[in-house]
Image 1: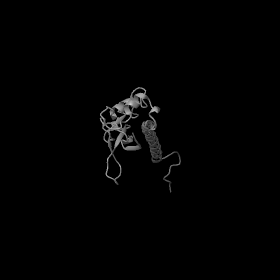
Image 2: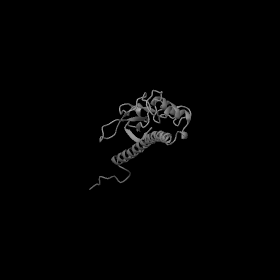
Image 3: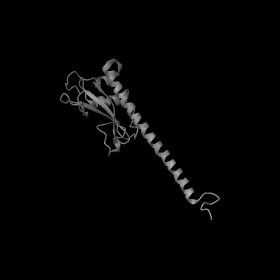
Image 4: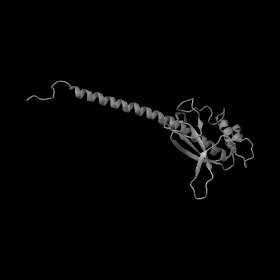
Amino acid sequence: MKSIRRMHGLALSELMFIVCLLGALALVGVLGWMSLADARKTERSKDRAVALLQWFDDLAAGPAKVDLAQRDKCTPDEVANGSGKTWLACRNALLAEGGPLHGIVNPFDSEYSVFGDKCERKNTATRGIIVVQESLKVPPGQPAAFGPMSPTRPLEKDLGFRVIVCDEGSFPIKVGESKL
């Protein structure tokens, strides 16, 4: 009785299995490398959001700790008096030369904005953006609610906000909360 197995070399099916196995391992390596690159970009966005929160914490601790140009635009008024201190003016001062966020670009694509209103999964332009949301008034006993901070929103004392970043899938990642 003859054996089905050949005595010399590999059968075609064995060779195809080895090629498929090597191809699968190469694919896992490539996809892992791509995921690592996206994770690094998300971490860069989170680091920038943490720097923003730290800057606001320094501002709250003592205005002398921060640069005068940003302090003038971002220090909240005691009461809303229409002084022109808006979120847009503060954000522009933070991104201006000498500001703590000067020169940063969106790590996913330099053409995308650094700040945005919300994370949208169907819009790749929201990957890597920093979203600042203001604390909304809720009835007592209800959980805290947040909504997008309008660019024209006047900065007021004790204005609560939270900072999130959008990951590579444009899912929101909460970074932290603070008050002005």
